Length: 144
Image 1 (cartoon, rainbow, N blue to C red):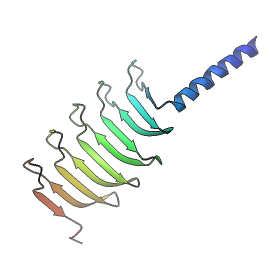
Image 2: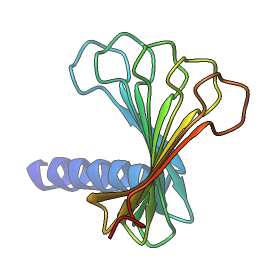
Image 3: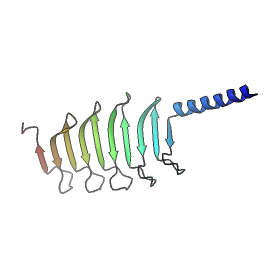
Image 4: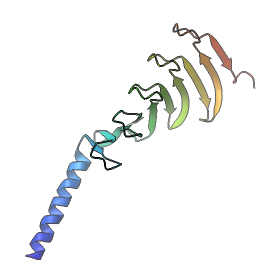
């Protein structure tokens, strides 16, 4: 009887693992409050998007997008906690390439920071009057 019970438990565990691994999306409750706060979206069996509610208020604070190969492609952060991402980190081959910021929270990017080697600021652009046109350009790459 114990062997049948053990086999049944192993079968249930295997089935649960298969469902978790093969499903296209799933969520977790990191702080054990009964509400999901970490969501995974899969495409073709690979995690492509991770969404996080870091302060457990029910609003997504961060989204991370990955390439088919599992390399980070883009991050979006919500600094004013309204559910709309307003700060983006764009990566090329896993290295930070550009940062885009909506500094006045109107859902339009108005600051662009271009990076070199993922660390050094190469160029900075800003739309100071929020009309959709760049007003300030600081090109550090030409200063070399």
